[in-house]
Length: 77
Image (cartoon, rainbow, N blue to C red; front, side):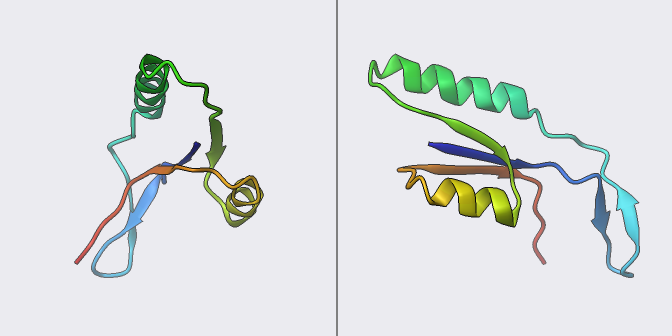
């Protein structure tokens, strides 16, 4: 399994300016929850944890993970 994370510090708003992002993700708790749930299955697993970038995505995809989990902020309009 691949665990990617991205936690930006700013966000672009409607007038195209940027503001500080005040809510950080609790990445460690989320990651530990995934690890604990995988361990409860009793099956062997490998887990890669990477900051999300084009390079890290290419590197991890070459290892052919069965599951990809991406934790990040997002917005939609």
